[in-house]
Amino acid sequence: MGKRNTFVVMQSEDVTPKYRDDPPPDYYIQPAWHQWWLSSILGAPEIVIPAGSITYRSRISELDEQLPVTAQILGAPRSDLKLISTAQRFLKDVGRPTTVKTGRNMFT
Image (cartoon, rainbow, N blue to C red; front, side, top):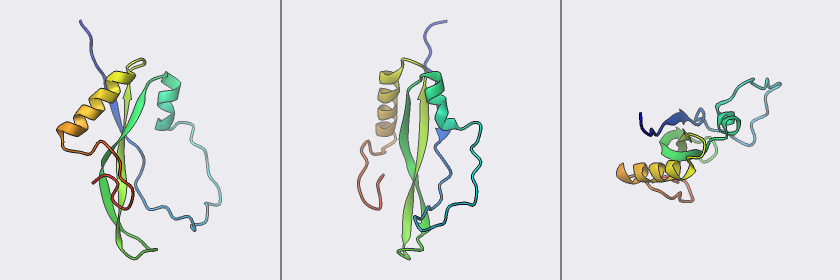
């Protein structure tokens, strides 16, 4: 069969504005499952990469702001270096930045 490289790509989370002055929900039910736990459960490497951004109207600044959109990539156990090099090569090949900037536009 030979060697194969398998990666699982997942959306990191729903992208919505979150404000510090929003009151917390009255109650919160902890889910029995969350995709963020997969890496820890499997002992597998995971990397989060920038996928883009979504424009929204900020109620604080009253300006159009950008929310970062990211993707989680999960590799097989013990494939840490392969996962990092593949993610870095992918970002370079598609013309995306490999470093994060500070400020309103982190991924541009």
